[in-house]
Image 1: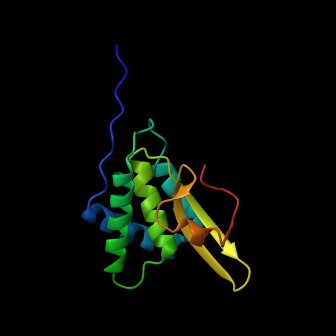
Image 2 (image 1 turned 90 degrees about the horizontal axis):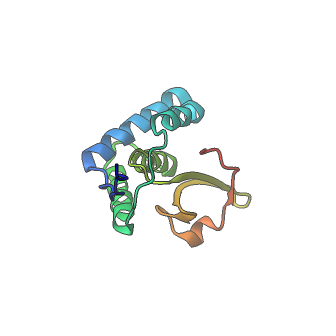
Length: 137
Protein backbone atom coordinates (compact mmCIF):
# COMPACT_ATOMS: atom_id res chain seq x y z
CA UNK A 1 0.00 0.00 0.00
CA UNK A 2 1.50 3.35 -1.01
CA UNK A 3 1.32 6.51 1.03
CA UNK A 4 -1.22 9.08 0.00
CA UNK A 5 0.55 11.86 -1.91
CA UNK A 6 0.38 15.28 -0.33
CA UNK A 7 -1.77 17.71 -2.26
CA UNK A 8 -2.00 21.44 -2.16
CA UNK A 9 -5.28 22.55 -0.57
CA UNK A 10 -7.48 25.00 -2.40
CA UNK A 11 -8.13 28.41 -0.89
CA UNK A 12 -11.55 28.92 0.69
CA UNK A 13 -14.36 30.29 -1.45
CA UNK A 14 -15.76 33.77 -0.86
CA UNK A 15 -19.00 32.21 0.35
CA UNK A 16 -17.08 29.97 2.74
CA UNK A 17 -15.17 32.99 4.06
CA UNK A 18 -18.40 34.94 4.53
CA UNK A 19 -20.14 32.12 6.38
CA UNK A 20 -17.11 31.53 8.59
CA UNK A 21 -16.79 35.24 9.38
CA UNK A 22 -20.48 35.46 10.35
CA UNK A 23 -20.13 32.38 12.57
CA UNK A 24 -16.98 33.72 14.25
CA UNK A 25 -18.47 37.19 14.79
CA UNK A 26 -21.64 35.71 16.35
CA UNK A 27 -19.70 33.27 18.51
CA UNK A 28 -17.41 36.01 19.83
CA UNK A 29 -20.42 38.18 20.69
CA UNK A 30 -22.47 35.39 22.30
CA UNK A 31 -19.97 33.13 24.09
CA UNK A 32 -16.74 35.17 24.09
CA UNK A 33 -13.22 34.47 22.92
CA UNK A 34 -12.40 31.50 25.19
CA UNK A 35 -15.33 29.35 24.14
CA UNK A 36 -15.09 30.44 20.52
CA UNK A 37 -11.43 29.47 20.42
CA UNK A 38 -12.03 26.15 22.22
CA UNK A 39 -14.80 25.28 19.78
CA UNK A 40 -12.60 26.27 16.86
CA UNK A 41 -9.79 24.06 18.14
CA UNK A 42 -12.22 21.16 18.40
CA UNK A 43 -13.48 21.78 14.86
CA UNK A 44 -10.01 21.85 13.35
CA UNK A 45 -8.46 18.77 14.87
CA UNK A 46 -5.18 18.25 13.07
CA UNK A 47 -5.23 16.22 9.91
CA UNK A 48 -2.21 15.23 7.90
CA UNK A 49 0.14 18.02 6.91
CA UNK A 50 -0.61 19.52 3.54
CA UNK A 51 1.75 21.08 1.06
CA UNK A 52 0.86 24.74 0.90
CA UNK A 53 1.91 27.25 -1.69
CA UNK A 54 2.29 30.98 -1.02
CA UNK A 55 -0.50 31.55 -3.56
CA UNK A 56 -2.97 29.53 -1.48
CA UNK A 57 -2.08 31.51 1.65
CA UNK A 58 -2.33 34.89 -0.10
CA UNK A 59 -5.63 33.92 -1.77
CA UNK A 60 -7.11 32.92 1.60
CA UNK A 61 -5.91 36.17 3.22
CA UNK A 62 -7.25 38.26 0.35
CA UNK A 63 -10.64 36.54 0.39
CA UNK A 64 -11.12 36.94 4.14
CA UNK A 65 -10.10 40.62 3.89
CA UNK A 66 -12.49 41.16 0.98
CA UNK A 67 -15.40 39.62 2.84
CA UNK A 68 -14.51 41.64 5.95
CA UNK A 69 -14.46 44.87 3.91
CA UNK A 70 -18.08 44.32 2.88
CA UNK A 71 -19.20 42.87 6.19
CA UNK A 72 -22.14 44.73 7.72
CA UNK A 73 -20.83 46.35 10.85
CA UNK A 74 -17.15 45.87 11.54
CA UNK A 75 -14.92 42.84 11.32
CA UNK A 76 -11.76 43.80 13.16
CA UNK A 77 -8.42 42.01 13.32
CA UNK A 78 -9.65 39.47 15.89
CA UNK A 79 -12.64 38.37 13.85
CA UNK A 80 -10.63 38.27 10.62
CA UNK A 81 -7.71 36.40 12.18
CA UNK A 82 -9.86 33.78 13.94
CA UNK A 83 -11.74 33.24 10.67
CA UNK A 84 -8.53 32.89 8.65
CA UNK A 85 -7.01 30.58 11.29
CA UNK A 86 -10.08 28.32 11.20
CA UNK A 87 -10.20 28.21 7.41
CA UNK A 88 -6.50 27.41 7.07
CA UNK A 89 -6.48 24.79 9.82
CA UNK A 90 -9.62 23.19 8.36
CA UNK A 91 -7.57 22.61 5.20
CA UNK A 92 -4.73 21.00 7.14
CA UNK A 93 -2.47 24.04 6.87
CA UNK A 94 -0.29 24.66 9.92
CA UNK A 95 -1.41 28.07 11.15
CA UNK A 96 -1.10 29.74 14.53
CA UNK A 97 -3.35 32.46 15.90
CA UNK A 98 -1.31 35.17 17.60
CA UNK A 99 -2.40 37.92 19.96
CA UNK A 100 -0.10 40.76 20.89
CA UNK A 101 -0.12 43.93 22.96
CA UNK A 102 1.93 47.10 23.06
CA UNK A 103 2.14 49.13 26.27
CA UNK A 104 2.38 52.67 24.94
CA UNK A 105 0.33 53.78 23.26
CA UNK A 106 -1.75 50.85 24.39
CA UNK A 107 -2.86 48.60 21.59
CA UNK A 108 -3.79 45.01 20.97
CA UNK A 109 -3.73 43.10 17.72
CA UNK A 110 -4.46 39.63 16.32
CA UNK A 111 -2.85 37.95 13.32
CA UNK A 112 -2.15 34.52 11.86
CA UNK A 113 1.27 32.99 11.32
CA UNK A 114 2.38 30.13 9.10
CA UNK A 115 5.76 28.66 9.98
CA UNK A 116 6.53 31.64 12.19
CA UNK A 117 5.78 34.30 9.56
CA UNK A 118 2.69 36.53 9.62
CA UNK A 119 0.39 35.86 6.68
CA UNK A 120 -2.28 38.52 7.14
CA UNK A 121 -0.13 41.34 8.49
CA UNK A 122 3.12 43.13 7.77
CA UNK A 123 6.01 41.50 9.72
CA UNK A 124 7.42 44.91 10.68
CA UNK A 125 4.09 45.97 12.16
CA UNK A 126 3.66 42.86 14.33
CA UNK A 127 7.18 43.31 15.73
CA UNK A 128 5.84 46.34 17.61
CA UNK A 129 3.66 44.00 19.70
CA UNK A 130 4.64 41.71 22.56
CA UNK A 131 3.19 38.33 21.69
CA UNK A 132 1.05 36.79 24.40
CA UNK A 133 1.90 33.20 25.36
CA UNK A 134 0.75 30.70 22.76
CA UNK A 135 -2.61 29.11 23.44
CA UNK A 136 -3.25 27.63 20.00
CA UNK A 137 -2.06 24.09 20.61
